[in-house]
Length: 157
Image (tube, rainbow, N blue to C red; front, side, top):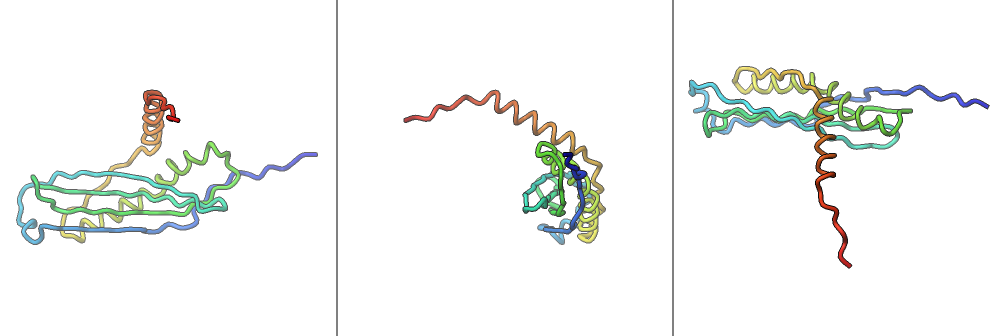
């Protein structure tokens, strides 16, 4: 008796902007500044299982521009998606959620950030491509290194 195994399935259920925050705390004086701001970009991904093969993944991009100690602008965008993953081995789900899903979300987050910065009266910030696989591998290596270095705790009775 042979069982027919269903093919692995990965699909996009929904893409949406979950959060958007724009701050220009030193307006209007900041628009008179002649110096170019220093721009810092941070990326963070979060995922949660929604049940029945559904996962929500949120890619949060935070862009902060400063001139010396003054904040020029702060934009934070949470681009999210619901993804369906079926018939995929459990050990392959984490890489899909940590690498494939953020790769899908990134172009949308890039557009939102650029648009928000431009609408705030500044030159657009164009986010460069991101190697989410490299970020995932670095996190895995860091977690393994911490586990190897962490002292083994013995519970006190």
